[in-house]
Image (cartoon, rainbow, N blue to C red; front, side):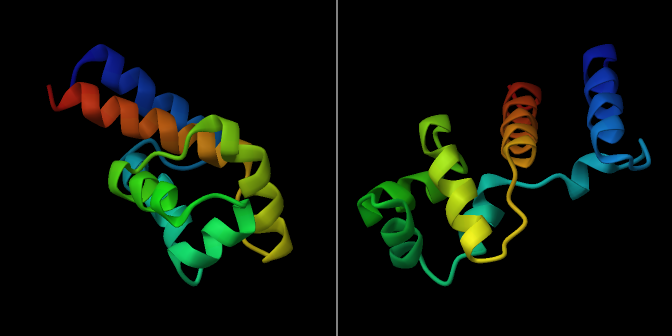
Length: 102
């Protein structure tokens, strides 16, 4: 594990108050957030977007930030624990994994 990766693991652990060891395994993903809804159609209706957009997000494991306010509000209405911080951490984890796989 290189220094940047070690620092990133430490940073995520601090955010979650979790153990540094293996903390990345417990980080949220946009895919998991999308799958928390009953279906892509329901999420699309909640966010007032085309279901095709939700399917692309799921495939890419990436919800564009311009949809985060509506997503957090819809999640709140459904009693789902979605926060801006969780979305940002999931994005950072995804990006770090993409960089480390190159």
